[in-house]
Length: 112
Image 1 (cartoon, rainbow, N blue to C red):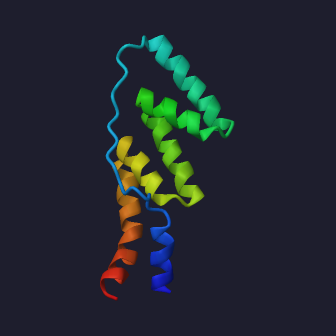
Image 2 (image 1 turned 45 degrees about the horizontal axis):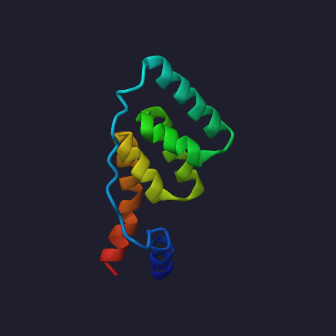
């Protein structure tokens, strides 16, 4: 059972490993332009176009949208992508919750 869980988790790790993403804030936008782009990102998200919404939310560093993306990825079963979004938002509450959920699995792996 535990080996099966290890294999399932390993399927989600990118082939080229992990990398750090840095978000550069967009200070060249007026508040009105930023609001317009955030609204567009929300429309895309609600339409299911998560990739474009993802790009907009990260470019704008729109924390609420990034957290919603994390929730979406988590519901899809992509915990690593969700954790990445929560780190970028940042949302320490959700990060702590995911860590608490992962600890028993890691504990089992170590004690095998």
